[in-house]
Image (cartoon, rainbow, N blue to C red; front, side, top):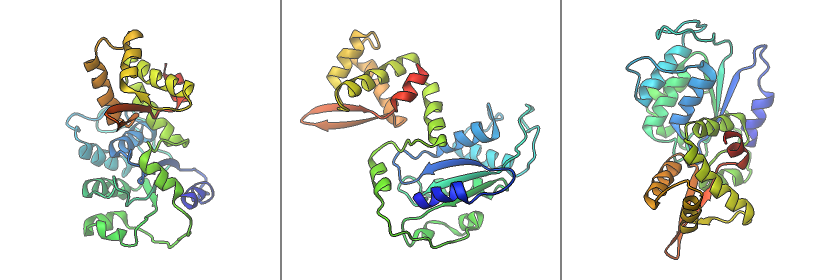
Length: 264
């Protein structure tokens, strides 16, 4: 991880610096959908997709086509878009991570990097990682292989196996900010209840029943079923973690307090 990040800041010297997106394949929170959203909103500048482009795979193919034919002032959707002046480099730590190694994800990643304006620098953990690609995917990636074994402990990678994977880099911040903007006031208030509890209790997880009572008293929810529904959405977006001990549920907020403050 350190080696890839070192390359990020010291390996590029073009007159027009590339746009950069970091992604962590070793994190359980890795989301192909979030990566595509970042490319669409932060790099291409898309507000919406053309009619008929609905599935994640279709969006991936559309973005690949857009980035394969620069410079662009107009796309086929009839709307004016900014010209893509810089290239995009995706730095993907552990492309053979648990949530990344599926055939569907690798297929979409290979489609993206085949575009002339999208490039990827990736690290692998396993010696036989190349076996996860079929011939077509391997040809699309068109890797240049470098053995840069560092013999350093994988402390960060292992730590992120059980955390959200949200870090301090710009791409991660934009990703979580994008999710928070899509939430309602009720969602944000519930997350703030968790955040305030953790801050006041020395980073302890909050018992679900205490969470419900607090949300009910603060008029965030009117019944337990409503809070359960919010909790499912939080877990889907990797905004909270839930653990069970002794027959009780404990909820932990995973969103940085600073991000919540900016959203509220």
